[in-house]
Amino acid sequence: MADFKDVANELRDLADVPAVEVITTTAVHLMSAAAVQCGLGEDGAKGDLDEARKLITALAGLISASAGEIGDHHARPLRDGLRSLQLAFREASAIPDAPGAGPGEKFTGPVN
Image 1 (cartoon, rainbow, N blue to C red):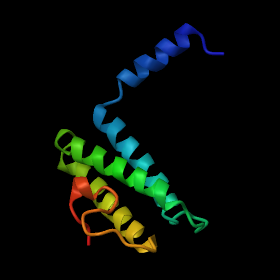
Image 2 (image 1 turned 60 degrees about the horizontal axis):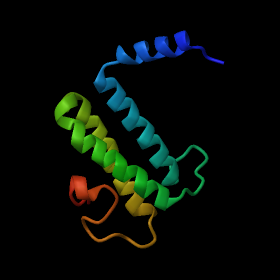
Image 3 (image 1 turned 135 degrees about the vertical axis):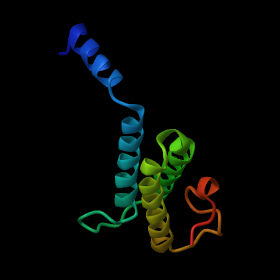
Image 4 (image 1 turned 180 degrees about the vertical axis):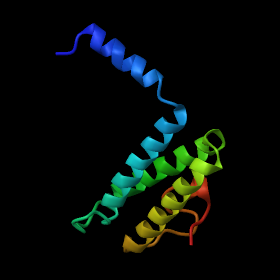
């Protein structure tokens, strides 16, 4: 069981992590989870597109909201990954969304 000193040390360590690192790490976790739910995991198992939609939308919101803060150097690869996931979702979906209605497209605009 962790005691108060352990928790205080962990919080202090977290305070030393730059915001850009927290944001990009969170985005990578969302991307990985969305990829698995789109069926892009190592085992190729079919995922859950409803779950993928939620994850991709959250990712799009995070990237859109933080792009100005983290700079183009960090935002560009995240946007590229997001676009790839949006396209993978569209490909995996049996019933395509209308342009602009796909996951995250309210933040990114239509993805073709």
